[in-house]
Length: 410
View 1: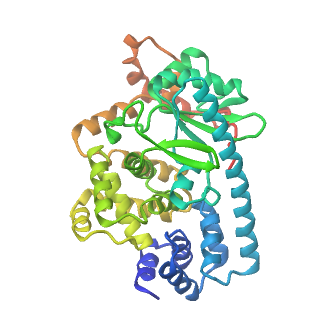
View 2: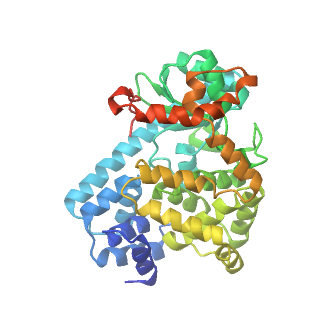
View 3: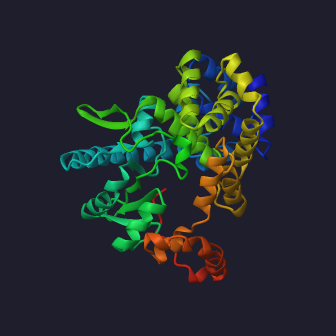
């Protein structure tokens, strides 16, 4: 077994290390002759294909696994091949519908004079992979300046969308409090069931992307001939993706694969520059964690000086260990252990006391309290006092007493 494959199997450390190694190898980009040969070596060692299917679904990379295994000429058992092909077709159809809806939404917002940027999604897929059909997308992620969020929410509702998260019904006062204390809301179209994740802040803790203004620089991405959409400019997109993945402990291979594909063709000098830019934005630990994970998972060679710098950081190494725990967990953070991991990790991503203080303020206010009881600004300090008793009251109730949120499409 090649050295990189042995390292993957050892680090993965769960019941099916070869299956994990194969799924990770399928996510490597570019899928050139070297990557294809490495993938064939992993497959030749023997693989439990039901485990591969489960991991591909868990990490939302089924289309990537299908494309890579086909490109590399892997002899996939017919049932597994049929499953991967079917899921790939489903993902492609859904992405096509999302792309068309994104173009429609951006044109409508442009006509109304509302600035809009896309985050991740099909625009990122087109930019990173050269095609928006192979990346699994759950939502249409859009960003608008905070002062536009209320109007955008209302406009989306007028176009057939309905609030799904954090609650299905919010009055105007509650929506204004949501915009102050949260960074996003989810709306689902009543007919198509497409989901829009509306962001008015890039991160929970703004110090992670310090200096990223209300209207950051953008780059254009062509989804269809004559249909161009806007996404964050390359440097800020790299920093944002690092923060997004780190905030979820990189618990899905999909997020790391997207980042790796985005920078796969960059020179060493450019990779160092991107890292320095992320560090200037306050996201240096997130970027360092991401680059080391790309090195170990996807054989992405790092410049020697940068590799040494990152490995000297005890915090970065700790974050990498946490990410491996999240990657090999049977689920992506929905368990108590996963949620606790995300909570703990959120305090490790910033580099100074100001970040930790801001994070303490964020977790000390419960969004449920803010929505349930909107207060005038001069009384907002009361939310700190409500946090613990409110948490005990909510989670002390029987599960049946808590109405479930409407399901979002997978």
